[in-house]
Length: 258
Image (tube, rainbow, N blue to C red; front, side, top):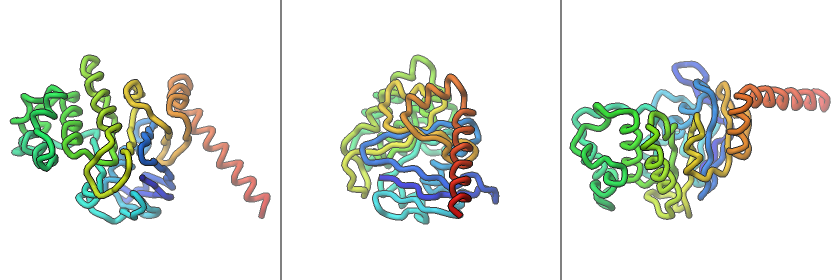
């Protein structure tokens, strides 16, 4: 469904992502681990097409179509949706009106909001005065209204209290595992790319593959629960040293061949 090929990205004239290669198949959920500042959020913002993220090399392929130079709205119309880590406040835009527009009349905003305990927020301006957990639920509400075929979630469990995490987790599971979706993708089954620091969301989502990003590149890939266990017990240094070792080995082999 999604294929990132040798992607390098500049932000503010500085290269932040280097030679990223990631793929997500239809019906699969992949997760991104990595320390703060490793480029995880930058990758999701680049896939979504936000300005300020300049692709200097590589391509973004979605369902066989090169979307590297498409606008945010064009990517959304193909069936890509994003939950941002720090979404902006939308002063003067009521949450209920935004949800109605995004759902295009497919479902009632009140029905979607009830699942996330946000019925009382529909008349409030989007994110204005919301707590961290309320913002996360608001973002999920908007994604549920859009119902994209490819879902990107930036730390869905961050800022969510222990009481609300189950509701958020179940909604994420429902959103990812739905069979029908809006967009032009024509895909069977949804795909998802989820950023997580704590791994808590894995209690509710059956992830298929994990990636560890360090210093703007993919350092490791493998079983997400095994990677999470390594990270919890050894930190990210193990992945970084392993990656450096692999690159050194490749360099030695190439020099030997020459």
